Length: 443
Image 1 (cartoon, helix red, strand yellow):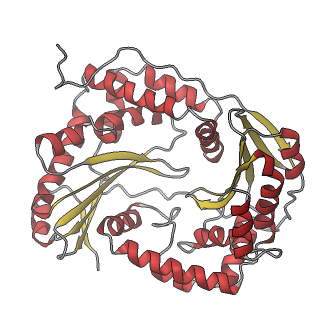
Image 2: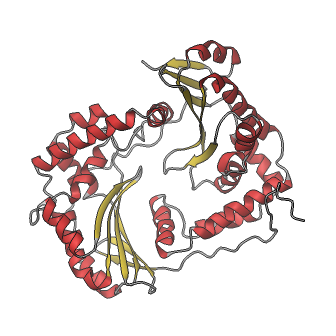
């Protein structure tokens, strides 16, 4: 009879093969091709690497990319939208911490028409006063709605406390930063920091490679006389800190904790990823087992590696009833200390391995997912054998090697925490814990 109180387990570790791709160079930028003939669809992404962050206002990159598809010298915003819809295409922009992307998704038979819209958006965007005012008003409204959500508000304040000078606390901006933006400022930022940034292109799907290269051959970028003033992460002081945000109207308390860790290129990163999986990275993790299943303090708790090019953190997040906030905080800290002092069991290790290695295979299911792996490698200046090596490191990891990682990174002496909600009665008890070097209040 099957014991359904225990999760199913298999000793067979899945295999992983990194996708094959072709690379060409056009006018000083690289183009990566990943073919998929199963559907008549082409996806083309132009990725701009962000190398100039100094003095950037929060939301400036977001504004510049959002307005990129809102009207050109040849078409109004409405005309662009109508043409895009007519061809069943999608021309969209996006912003990440280390890159911005302009994305074209279209049927193969309409590629020429879609590529014309794509090219028009990138080279001829006008950033009209009308569209800028519309964006600013809409964005302020969106931010006001977001900040009314305690979870989002906690996330922003936590990021502001945790991050150094490199990364802003929010990609979409704050109400004040968006209100202060000017049209010429956003357009100028696009010309210098997006248009002229280092670039690469990824193409997936049922494409004609020669036709793609011919089209991209028209992409000639002017050279701006400027020096790169990209900032590097400032070394954080070795201290623990907690920020209390008193919101008496909330019955729940949002809890966020962060520990500084290494970036993806570091040799420790693969086993750190495995360790985090055991700690809080999936449903069978220690955090979820303790705070959800045993203690009943929350419906769910998790941790993840917020891995970026210049600084990375292990992030823990949950929400609990206001009377349980201190208990939850205590249990999280206990789990951190326990992981730093004891080896994981073989069952824990093997179960987490199977989950994490299986996740890698899901990342490899489609050419689009494969292209995201290629994009991550280029953005983070990694070697192209990065993922196979990472996969193999996890596959052969044992409890001895993992314990070295546990002891090295799971420490509370550089812990950053935010508690948001009805936390007034919790303050004195937190001070008695003796964990945090500094206690702050949000004004």
